[in-house]
Length: 160
Ligand code: MN
Image (cartoon, rainbow, N blue to C red; front, side):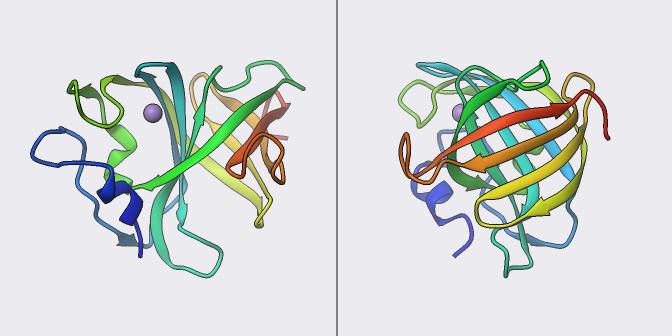
């Protein structure tokens, strides 16, 4: 079921985060949220179908400890986390102490993206943000570094 893990982790009477709501159709936006949790990290989210055979749209999500790579050729660890609801794309606020992911969340960048390729192990796309621009690849590391580990690589400075 869509967003089950998202719901399990949260108490919506306590957190200001959006409730889990699965939607159909509409995709093509991304966001990077700077999350001042116990460990500062950046949450990278792509609005897309929850899996290759689904028409339910969620935010596929990765926690990127060092942030989105800014130089061509740079690689950063990106740990896949639970799918988030589409409404989360512009969430900013303070997740209270004692709640999952407690700490401040603010938008670092957002915009549209163009999907080039998606399969189980590779997602290629062009980001059209203010800070994150150009072609990137997410590659699943096949178990190295944990089963949810991916690398995000910056391929080109612009959308080419
Ligand atoms: Mn986070």
